[in-house]
Length: 350
Image (cartoon, rainbow, N blue to C red; front, top):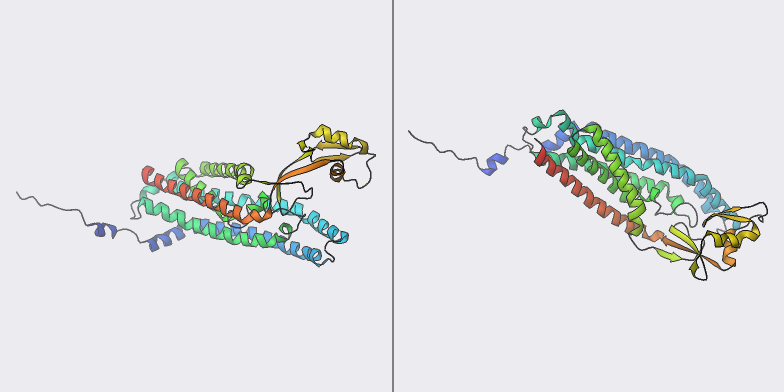
């Protein structure tokens, strides 16, 4: 009896059966064209809303820039009226736009991998020559690039539209204000990418589409809130000033009153303002009474009586350094989350 020895095929022959990257890209595009179209449609709808607002803002702002002399009381009143008329609407619109990255993460990122696990179709996919790692990486990278590119284009439109409210000294909003900062520069693309990566990882971990979507919304919201309240204010140590008119484009972190260099509380302020019938609601909010003189300014009154208003703030010139800091750590986070999702597909897809 003769034994015939067989050898395993060479590595090159084994690799020749793999589906080429170009064909994989075509398959991914066909499979996820609705998700890609949804991402682009959401960004387009947001951009149209912002453009409509931006045209109105720039038209109204033309009256502010045309007023001469710029430092006159009349021109300051024109600037104040412009800020009062458009700041509230801009705040509402930007608050709504904060949800865009979370929606992309929940509706495009979470179902991307969770869908094939929930339906069980991954067993068929892994027999088609893609390979688990290549299949997961191709899916994640392809859609992530589309989402990040669309977000980057939107941030350019947004910066143009709301530029007038962010460029007025003493009026409007600071460029570091969270509702605007998150939607400009590289931060918006980075937050969109992070939301997408959170959704993809949640999909692999939970393997059910709807629970993964809710988990994505919760995780992204918690991360965004923690960043705005706890992390971003500490990218750089805040500066201090006694200028009572500090404001846009600077972002005020906190304010407190001092007397002879020592901090004072609400009771000391109330005692000082009692002769003019002004009640102190909080150290920064004052309520005039019936006998308060007309057009009375409690801040300047306290300054004239020896008090000092100290503010910690971040200057508007820190906008781009903060953008690069936030964009960098969000990019690293997104890469780690995406790599974790790919590793889990390789290890747990059974």
